[in-house]
Image (cartoon, rainbow, N blue to C red; front, side, top):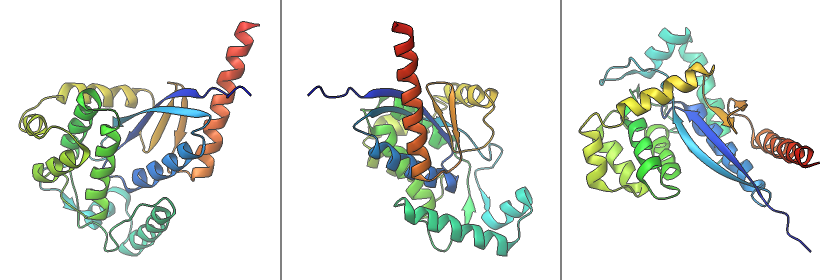
Length: 231
């Protein structure tokens, strides 16, 4: 019996470290990838998006920030936190039950993610992404603090001296800005956003079942298109 070949899909996971829904979305997407692993392999790259690019290094109280940005009340924010926590439990991600005290600028985190993609071993960028999300949303650590970022880099397997050098300089600033602009120019203004094969867009923190269905459909359509070209 001939084993069915797996289809490889190029996937860009556009997200921000400070976005709790991105943690939920990543968990659901990884569950979906595990379910289709016998049919689909994924080349996942984590792409930068900043929810608050103008945020200063001192950060801002999260409740104050959400009220200013969205007009939400403390009661509404508590309801949303409960919903996010429940969704996190479904995908194996633990949120700090007390909520995060402050929200931070995440540009340096994106520079490290770029480093992990371009210079790290396979899997390093994904490991760093998970480490950063846990530092931010599980332990409520300050994501503008280079000590926190360096600890995440070491946890992910990056070279310590190289990570320190990147954080101490403006290395990869232009590259990250260019990628941010590219995805924004393609109409991505909220995250998580998952771009598959440069043309299929999955938006939001969907359940694993929805991601699984979409992945199977995209892979099937690609196979049908290739079959049509060869006939």
